[in-house]
Length: 390
Ligand code: NZQ
Ligand code: ZN
Image 1 (tube, rainbow, N blue to C red):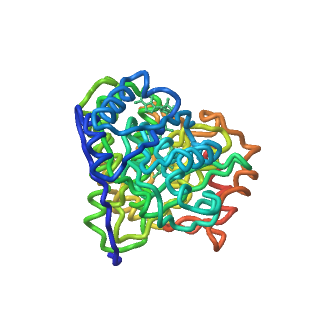
Image 2 (image 1 turned 90 degrees about the horizontal axis):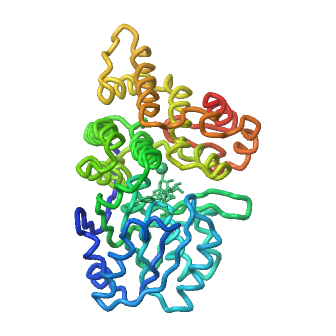
Image 3 (image 1 turned 180 degrees about the vertical axis):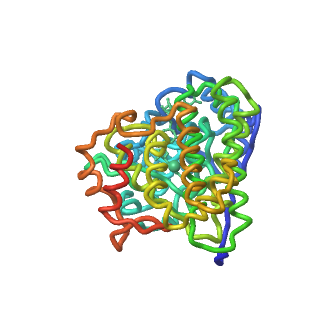
């Protein structure tokens, strides 16, 4: 196991009625005037907006509203939010919604005290060390932004989708009431489950040896998803399944399952080009890319893929030919994704073969021209992975 430091100081309030504590939590973490940030209106339809504003009023906390965050959030609203916060003297940002709203809130939080263009954090990879405090009320189990230091924004100039990060961006608190996720339609629910699983997979496929504890934690989250997903797809109001999935989304991405090991993240980078270009759901893009990535790289460490197959998917180990087991694990992952309604290829996603060269070109490869901590991939490899997903 590698050395690591881990500090993840988000305060969580989880369960039925937890949204009533929002006002108290904003006060506890020093907010006196709030930017209430949200998306396209789901929070007004399912009652969470009313519950949150009632709590803010109860604690005498003034707020300014900024709605309209799009899935795959854009830079334009971030610039607007930064100006609004400065003009109104906002000292706390409350994101009510999904990963897109939370990521937009984090971008505004980073941009307010920064003299330059907030996009520097995304285009140059500078870690965010100063930001307004952010709190979240989560309404979809997926991105894990409620416990992560990460934010992903699409710049409208060139439709570049890029990630930014910094410990200053970890939410001060996150309120998670699984009841509010019951209004998610099956497709969006399945996209979230896929994203959660791939967050674990990005960490699971590692070259670091002797990481039994985090291997086992990763396997536990994946198995929980395999158990809970069919229940919630069959009954969207299954509170207990929603609750298990919601907490899994946090556990999958606040890095408790990834410390002490090298991580991969190629699938995410490759997917971001799809959601930037086609505006598809991130989880759906991952369902297309991640199995293709697995097919392309499994030979790098057949035994790790066989372990994934046996421990996560309960495949029988073929000791004479572990490659067969490895491939069976990938096949079961694909079948699972299909069973919850995910697309598995470009055609099902609505993506086009002729766009592949452009996606490869715009992709933000690392400084050395590669991505991927498990297998290092260059342009030609990424091109080949897109083609495996056709
Ligand atoms: O905008 P509204 O009306 O709220 O509708 C949203 C949106 O259309 C809807 N929705 C959310 N909660 C709902 C609901 N509809 C009914 N009932 C509810 N309770 O769902 C749609 C998708 O919302 P979005 O916030 O986009 O989903 P998600 O949480 O999957 O976030 C996706 C974004 O997160 C980024 C992705 O790239 C993508 O841009 N990621 C962020 C990460 C991070 N910050 O750590 C890591 C992830 O890997 C990911 O890249
Ligand atoms: Zn993701």
